[in-house]
Image 1 (cartoon, rainbow, N blue to C red):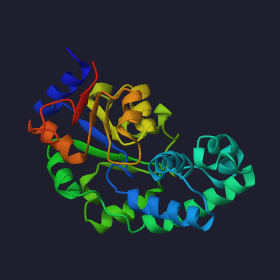
Image 2 (image 1 turned 30 degrees about the vertical axis):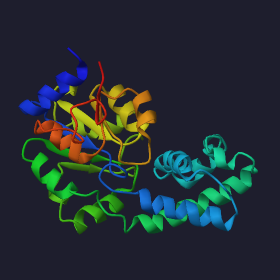
Image 3 (image 1 turned 90 degrees about the vertical axis):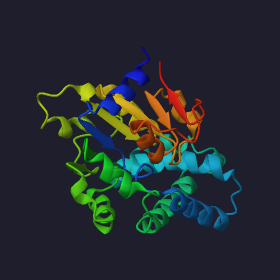
Image 4 (image 1 turned 180 degrees about the horizontal axis):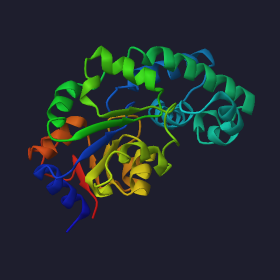
Length: 260
């Protein structure tokens, strides 16, 4: 039987114990703040680029560096900037200047970023059957601010930002604080849900199920390459899957990709 189908059966039967969510791009809609920050800086610097691919590339960079202390960002920035195609012709210091400006603007705009539509209602339903957690590269205080604004902090058994994690994704130790309270549970009693390749990798390396959600800045094609157990379009589709409803208004693989 396909691994993805096994996971679907366990979700629908309620035999999964915990769901571990990424935050930015999974529960929090960061697309508009990130696009706004990139467009403002690129326009000021007269840089022409395909905005879709640039958002994905810089979004992946942001996912990484927001969990790093400044010295580590500076130390590893040369390698990280290689993957931003729109900046390839620029000098390293010009890339660094642009990246810092985008990151600074993004952090400001992201404070007002909304949760994805229906997130509160979806989480309210999920918490009745599953223990919910957040493991994010964002700072814990930032995550808590958004959760408290929506009055959903009590929905989660644990909230772990980059400042309290023993390691960052995709290192499987990033998930270890969750398992400390579940000595009798198996790793396959948990699911990692996220919108980035690092979410899929950390789940696979830790030995838990993985569900990719194509609601953030990573394309479905990119997420598919990392072979999650299931790929869905949105949180709504994730809930529909559990409630045995149609996914993306279709019974085809268009809205749901299952790993064999």
